[in-house]
Image (cartoon, rainbow, N blue to C red):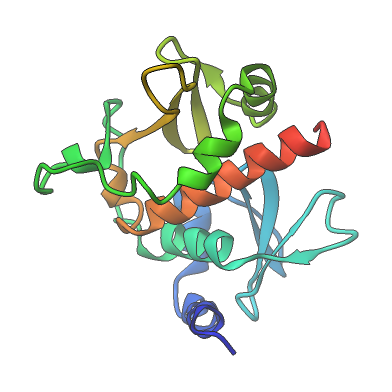
Length: 206
């Protein structure tokens, strides 16, 4: 078992120690006696109320697929570790500009280099994928959308295609209060999975 699997399994068990009724009320979750339901990156997920296991489905859970590490840990983090009275500010900023952080080069710049390369100069397909995911079109960049990893939690994606002078560039911004909802490192899990979803839609024709 990998370290990732160990951590995910540990969080699955830890999830059961939290007040599920509070989660339901806090995030207005659909639920029944067996599961909690939450939409993440355009897909519906469910969390077992008895085991804590996270699965997703695109056919009303007639068929289920186990959530991967980035998906499961993002969902656990929001439901279990968000602050009690978390609220959005309505102001977006990059992670290096969050309150309490030290100003520096934007973190994670090279982390998504492969995805940035793959998305370059595919503007029409890129936009279509963002819109299929419920994104709201912005005005800055060749591709610009406000996307909702969770229905209650927005992030801003701005992308510039390469040209003769500059390489392709991706800018991600979050609400100033993002750390009230999840841990700093979880933002990278979410961006990674959102980019995977966008590429998946572009490759399969949605």
